[in-house]
Amino acid sequence: MRHTFIDGIVKNNMVLVLAIGLCPTLAVSTSAYNSLGMGIAVIFVLVFSNVIVSLLRNVIPKNLRIPIFIVIISTFVTMVDYSMKAYVPPLSRQLGVFVPLIVVNCGILGRAEGYAYHHPPHYSLMDGLGIGLGFTIVLFIMGTIREILGQGIWLNIPGVFPGFCVFGKAFTNSSVLLLILPPGGFLTIALLMGLFNHFRGGSK
Amino acid sequence: MNLFLLFLSAFLVNNIILMRFLGLCPFFGVSSKIETALGMGMSVIFVMTLSTILTWFLYQYVLIPFDLVYLRTVVFILVIASLVQFLELFFKKQIPGLYSALGIFLPLITTNCAILGVAFLNIDNDFGLLSSVVFAISSAMGFLLALVVIAGIRERLENAPIPEALKGLPISFIAAALMALAFLGFSGFMGLSL
Image (cartoon, rainbow over all chains, first blue to last red):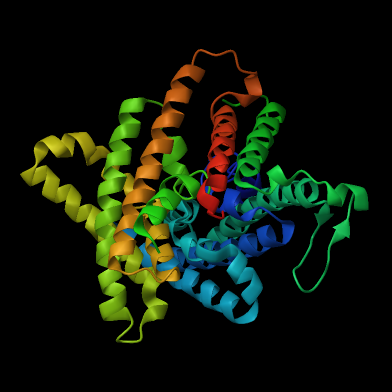
């Protein structure tokens, strides 16, 4: 079970290895706080959909499995969407359309189909946690890089906490704005993937 | 909003892939050859337009009157999935020529977040039917444009000397970053904000 968890974080990393779930990764990672919010939403959906699919795996007929998975996943996505709108409205506005779009994150459907449908609930729970955590870690790293270089601050939570001033005032006033903009997202993930490939001994 | 401005905004300024980050999976998945990129792009134009019309009517005339707005995520994804299935069967039986051109891309479109994303964006922006359709078509054309351009770049990258660690996806991301940078130039265009 520990292996399932660790594999989910490193070997089956959703973004860096399997290259799925790219849309939210790039769109949301403009700041560390947004990344964390998205990551937690994905962990919630992934864990619950994995467990439910795994509990029902003997009841779900093979031919109808995909629509059933989609209904299960979108139920949890709707729960997350409405909870975020109610409790953290600023974050919900920042993430915008990408919260309901968790439903088409191929990673979640892929885990339901590829793992939870064939494994008992406690393994599926660990798998969901591992994959979700792997996704969140990558998102958080990207958010951190882009926020620090692009705005000069780290962990800014709008209206709650101004964030740490990492390189001093002078840098904050002349930060690399490009990294907050869309091209910066592509560039950051390109270099992050390159670095990951390099340390894994070039898998491609 | 002026429809022509809406077209330019969705096609270039807020390009659905490079600026909004919707539909990145097919953007990197089927962009290794120009022909497949064209096929995928055409399928997206077709499905996105149809699904927009369908979801718009469903939302305005079923979900709102019956106070079921909270079901929109479930309803939209199921509608789009069944639409895609239906189109696949219909083409296979009735228009085999079109099926062999677009058929293989249709199943992939269900998980294309651009389709669902555009349906949500239409609602979040309170577009009417005409604006929604224009928005869908121009977004899909922006998708086709970005897809074909990156496919051209990737065909050239095949034979280029690239550092070992950056081969494959990372170098494509760098190419996409440069494209996005170029598209950023459009945002100064006619004072449309990003």
